[in-house]
Image (tube, rainbow, N blue to C red):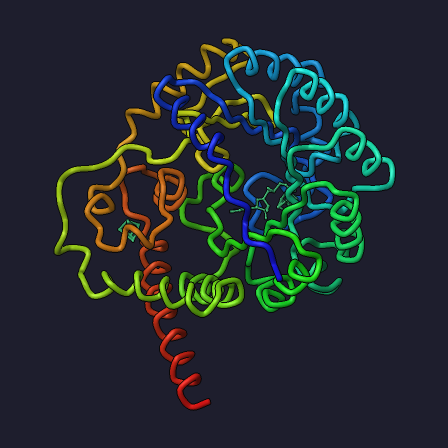
Length: 378
Ligand SMILES: C[S@@+](CC[C@H](N)C(=O)[O-])C[C@H]1O[C@@H](n2cnc3c(N)ncnc32)[C@H](O)[C@@H]1O
Ligand code: SF4
Ligand code: SF4
């Protein structure tokens, strides 16, 4: 049985809520590098063929440790170390250990392919809070299509070994045109190993690297993205849970968005820039990695001033008024980053997402109805 994503401990939610009110950055992502040994086509950070160039521009060991110290002083407790592929940095454990000593709770995002006996030993010696490994397929061929390298066996071996050694492993599953056919296989693998797996079929346009081509990515169509959301939900939920979900989504399905159009817009609804921030591999500070605005420069002005700027500017962002009064809001995952990467403006409606939401509601209902009919016949 696949474990559902473990609920965030209530103390973490409490701390974020409290910190948001006080304007303290309790959570921070440290994007240690943009370099990667994979070349996933939808990636928002890694630029194919530019590893050598990127290496020259990324922060040094000392810069990362210093910025972490400043973050800790400002109240950051939860740190996510990511990339690119963070284990490509030879100084990964130097940064990791220094941050551990400072008292951070550290999670790591990795593609899992570079972990060897030595890395496993070091992780076991001083384990992270959690390691999130992306599983990009259920066979070597899909890995080749999706990541440009047939690393499937190696990744699987590492997931199993870390889990067996007692490290808290969780799987990230990004569904794209290159690996969608393996969705069920991936679910079954997670199930067999007994790890939490979270699948996402919406891929942000990678505007940080593609010249701000808003709304573009090598991704599924909204209809397909909905299809794979529903497929994953059918796999992970019990019949009762799926029924509840389908029914609650269906409730607002027939109300036209324009019927509810108001003129009140809302501000940023998540933690980005309020209680959490993102430090990029080349030394910028963003509210979140998908949202490169507002931007501050902690290497020049110091961490505290950079955070004050991001925190102040985020409060000025207004989202589309149509979203504030949208009847399908509860079924929607849109946010400031989605609006911006899809449209180039925070207050413009991301129509790709509206389409995905409409499709998800209707496909979920269809799946529920055909499931019920099948049960009656049986
Ligand atoms: C950028 S990667 C960095 C860590 C590591 N290399 C990995 O693949 O897990 C972090 C996560 O972001 C996902 N990701 C990449 N591009 C994305 C995009 N455009 N939209 C949403 N998620 C994306 C990846 O699939 C992965 O699960
Ligand atoms: S493995 Fe991660 S960082 Fe590397 S290309 Fe894929 S998504 Fe991007
Ligand atoms: S993005 Fe979401 S909330 Fe906004 S209009 Fe579309 S479905 Fe509604």
